[in-house]
Image (cartoon, rainbow, N blue to C red; front, side, top):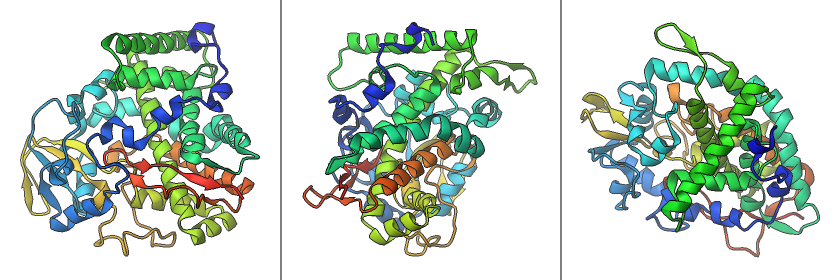
Length: 437
């Protein structure tokens, strides 16, 4: 790759394994912008369950219903809010994607700064744009290409770094680092400071801390320069990465014609992939490790029968999904569970409550690897189900396999404060402190 396409001349492994103070600043669930206004280190799962038991559908956003302030700038258009809480109501919200439209995401300043993406597209447009990238994220492709090319090496490098230590906070040392570097390398940014790139991307999209408008503008220029140079390099000389695949595949338009993604469309796709692939997997990996270590019988079973690790990942997604609700727009008056949701309302699909609905799941608040197979919504459902879900699952499975191989008696550190499952909009572990022996 051309030097201009890689930013600073820093090997990815150097930054991935460094003791950079930016990790603690950037990967703290309590200081994540989306969690502004909530109580630190509080698990809101019971509160969401309580809302569901009041009614399957309630007027108000989840934050309104819990008496919490809305996140500043999350929604730029004033709308009446409604929340779907039961499993049946949430499932309809996801499946009936024309009635409950994701176009409402265009009203988020942060999402709009990413650029046009499949997040806010609907119908045939969504299907056409998603089809360009979908082949790169299918399960067989993930198990071969992603795992062999990026995931295994990243897991090994991170765990090698922990050899010889008595303990560590895996939230910072493993969970935060693994998905960020997998997705950055998969895009094609093999040799750059991925932590710095993600920092620039976050600042240019959502702002960050006390950053000035000038610093935000500088970060935006840096992100655009790096991605622009990389796309140009891949157009001139294809590689073995996700950008090359996206550039090669045809976009089939509703009128029957085809074309390639524009540079702007590739820009937006890369930004979305970094945010979705880095943040969601970071938090869900920590959640899964914590659930296994607080249920020693489950850890032992997964250690003895490694196929059960993926079962544990799915059960963690059901019980503690990192993103517990998603907004949609009601495109017409619609009756849900006997309640009329009006046209034009912002509808919040609260899968965090739906996944724990006792009308669907027996003992729904328990972590149980042997519950009867039942679809859940931890990664969404229907046409907008998470594009990278198999990548995320494979990263979590490989990380836990690696931990079990090296430290079969891994346990939570009894000398550290008990980690908490915290946050609301973006939930995760406050920390994952462990002892290796």
